[in-house]
Image (cartoon, rainbow, N blue to C red; front, side, top):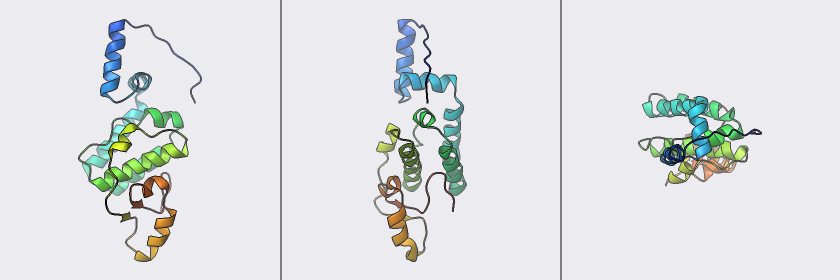
Length: 161
């Protein structure tokens, strides 16, 4: 939780330039300046996105992302989840990332990043298990963020099976 304030003096031109850069990044000015000054969480987010984009092991990359998201505070969630995942990710993977982020944000009472709304939910349901006997369980136990995206899983951010 933020309890302190920092003020800096800039010229009108510098303020306008920071504002333009923040808009290009899809962030507010404060979040942008913080991400530039303290890039630790933003850098980790980008590293997770690179792991997902590499495509070598999506399950391992998602497990790493899940553990990282589970450890973030509400403030870190609000500031460290930019930019959006790469546009070339498969729809299932992009929806899983969006659901993970939405679930983590909901659990801490913060709004998810705007980019999550740009990822269309899956047209057909995907289940976290191929066992048809588990489908009813998955349909009724999946967290809301996953269900909205037509994903049905037994565990969410921070959980492991």
